[in-house]
Image (tube, rainbow, N blue to C red; front, top):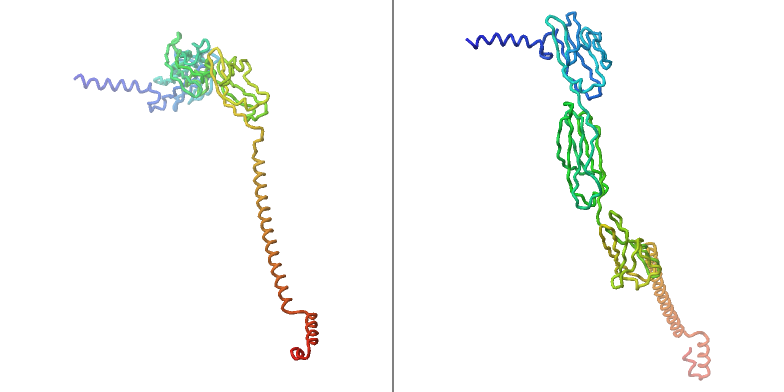
Length: 395
């Protein structure tokens, strides 16, 4: 008996509840609207529409059920509230310079039989304030542990804080506390890390992430100073010193604080060679006795560091440059070609002289085999003076 009697009651409740649902009813006389989110200080537009107005006007009311507009008529004297559009099927109004107190449910009504309403929830975002970093008091020493705190208030909903050191993200511990107004929140975060000499002059940045900022950067940075022991290196000027030249050995010290004194020593010599605020060791006229290993100690109130440099003094002959080497190679090639030509000329001359002597020898032999005319005449005359017996020989 109990269960069947409950069914009509449930149907009655459903019928009574349905007209109040702005977006669920299929009734053309039911108005509809939408929820809105606005950043504090901004402007929100409330739009209410209906298909069948049944010769009635639309009305907007605030969360305190105060009428803002009835049709085109302003009902509340608040210059922030302005009429945007008023027709039989639509009533739109705007609220500028929205405050956190403006948050809540706004009601759009149409006075038909029965009266129909639609709700619009206006959410106001609280903008977080610029973060404040605390905890840094004075310079830190290398390997010290630093703890920094960051705080931002006025966010709604609660903002999120992030830390970074250069390109490195630091992990902090965040806490959320409700502000006295009961609407916004204060968020705080702390980060702890060990500092190194590379952190000297670094900026530790705390940033606020919140939807009201729409991607805009809202951050604060804290520059830290780290004190550390010095380092040093020795740089010769000129880079390749030679005998007879002037040489400066520069001791380049780095540190925080910067080294105030420099001590020069040479292995095997009575120390110190020099101790001064000037970091350079000067050799006005180099000689080979200056060769050796030199040490420069950079000194600050944080400690000291010694760098070494081995000096080898060479003779004054110039070191061949790339251009002189090039010319030397070309000269060598030319000299080799000339040498080959001389050898060729010698061989040719020897060949010509040898063959010319052979030709003259053959010419001389030809003259002995064929006596000239004078010799023949002498022989003929000799034959005549020899008697008659010789005549037949010549005939």
